Image (cartoon, rainbow, N blue to C red; front, side, top):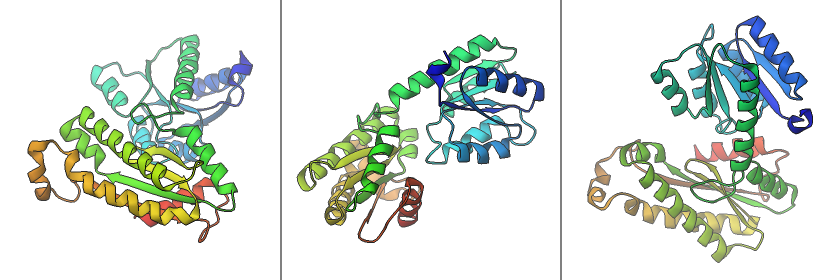
Length: 288
């Protein structure tokens, strides 16, 4: 049983000392690497640093609550898809809905059965590992598969990375619904993959980094040309992402409400990165 979890890191956020010590000891025996915090602010910082595979997060904490911890983690690119199990005494439907809206994979109320918690943690990890390779909407590689391809690219002497962002997609989803937003993601995927097929090399790669963020890996010579092609096609398509009866109103939307395209590229001609964190920071600075 322990071998199945070997290497998995679990982060427990719980301010009840006795309970946190019991959970820490129990999951260590199960073969997990266990990290712990008793305050929400500490949890945000430590989880970001430790990059665990799953977090068991109490909602009632002495400073910020577990919901706020989860919100802040979701704002971090690396922690955006971290599986979170809320552990709480709250039982109201609204509380559970709040957790699910934040992307929690499960919700367990106290008192709980430790064996049930163990199985829920195991099942959440299994689901995450199955789903982490390919985005269910776009069919593009994401998660660990995308990370591996990016790391492989950075080890080569010649590489180029293009970040194509469709900004405002979350607000678009709120206004027009999940189906319309998913159609946008699929259309963007098709345009980007077609651009890579037309201009790229056999080993080029398109991955899904975040809700509206797509990463293209190519050669340094192709990166700027590919970035221009992607920006031209995506920008021209923006009006057609909206329902037909809404297109004439796009010009009346504020910048914060309107879909927008932003494309940047980096290559080995100007940069050398030792890890992906440095690459992501540089991409974020270039797109700001």
